Amino acid sequence: MTDLKIIMRIARTDLAILFYSPIAWFILIVFSFLTASGFASLMESIVTSYDLSGGDEVSLSSICFLGSYGFLSSIVSNIYIYIPLLTMGLISRETASGSIKLAYSSPVTSSQIVLGKYLAAIGFGCCLMLVPITSAIYGSLVIPSFDWAPILVALLGLYLLICTYCAIGLFMSSLTTYQVVAAVGTLIILAILNFIGGIGQEYDFIRELTYWLSINGRTIDMLNGVIRSEDVIYFIVVVTLFPGIYHFQTFIRPANYQSVPTSNQLSGIFCRSNGNRLSHFTSGND
Image (cartoon, rainbow, N blue to C red; front, side, top):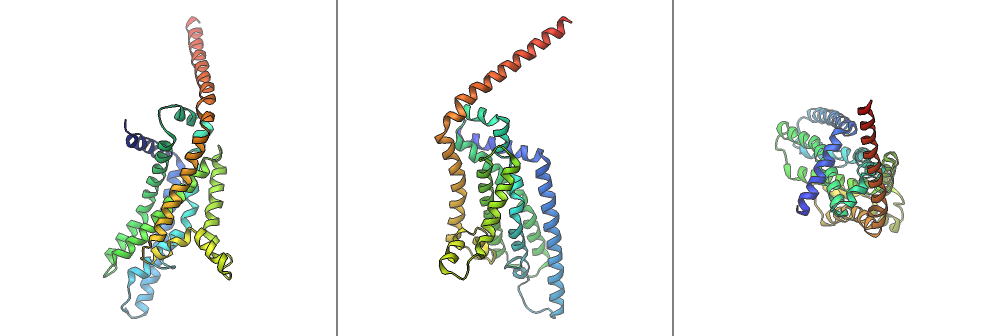
């Protein structure tokens, strides 16, 4: 079996586990409801303002979707709340149950496990993206002269932000066996990276430093329909950095995952199987 097939099988399994859990459906329902209601209220206010202005020639698609007060900007401001609930159990759940030890003792590399779980997370992110994409399609049907190009750029920026959040959440999930701790830690990190851009703006050095640390600020230009290679490279670096750190941790500690835990777990499986056979034999004699 090739590496790609192994990665895709791990991704499909983890994505199925996500949809079997109530947390994933809760995220989808709440995100869809709040996003749709926000879009409806925004459209209502824009249409009212447009009618009161006498139908001036303005780009309604840009006003509705782009800019700091557009529909996609509101999603960017709140999406960090949902990602910790999505990623909190990617690795911590299997670490707590012990199944991660069997995974590392099998002929599967740590990089394949990391990539498979990350693909499952961003696959669920694609499901979240269906809500703003559906809103954009509806907007193209009701807004005359709808400009798709900047809207697609803004949607790309939103999805890159989701991928970055998932990478950070995956790393935080690998640091603990408790899903709640992983969720709270991810939420704190994402909140810091979201609001650090407004700290110390009166000092040049601090302003430059917080600009580089602020993930949320990297989507500002994309939300205005402009792609900058600097922002794209930043997202790619962060996405590869955090899973890479987790892969490096498992690489320098192979004994913790392969030698001792595997023997203990095999002993437990052997004892449980013998106990089941003994109970079956005793019940048969009775």
